[in-house]
Structure formats: structure tokens, C-alpha cells
Image (tube, rainbow, N blue to C red; front, side, top):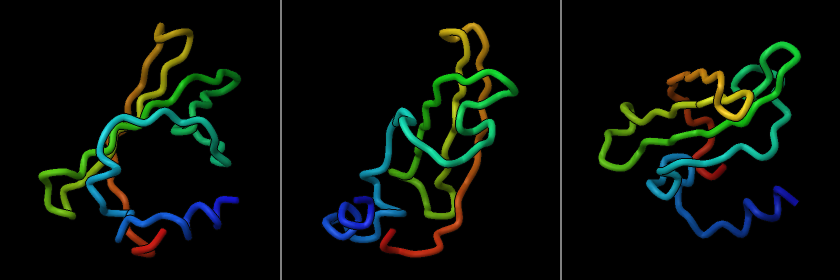
Length: 88
């Protein structure tokens, strides 16, 4: 299903498109780490803020916010990414 969705995407270079800009809630991942909302035995909500618009490609970044207990505990991680394929 994911491959079908990728092939139907009309966006050129989706990995660097300003259309990614904004706040996204993580609803599915195969990642087992803390950026997936898993901190020890606890699982929280993950929001990812992607910042591309108005920035050079090298300055684009994202912030992962992990909230546990309805926001009683919150952690944040700022990072960048390497584009491995322009079409995925």
C-alpha cells in the first residue's frame, strides 16, 4: 500500500518539498526508539515539527516532541536528515 501511495504522489522531490512543512502527529512507525515515543516501559504521543520553507536545504530540520502522561513529561529532539532518494 505504501508503494502505491508513493507512486501516486505528484510532488516533485517530496523529501525537500515545502509541503512537508508544519506539525505532524506520528501515528505509525517501526522504529523502536525514543523518537517513536517509547521511553522505557512508557509510550507517549509524538509530534514532529518539520521546518523547510524559507530555509536553505542544508538548514532544514525537524523537532520531535515526545509527550507522556498527557504532557506531564515532555522531551524534544532537534535533528536534520540526509536525502537518500529524491523521490521517496
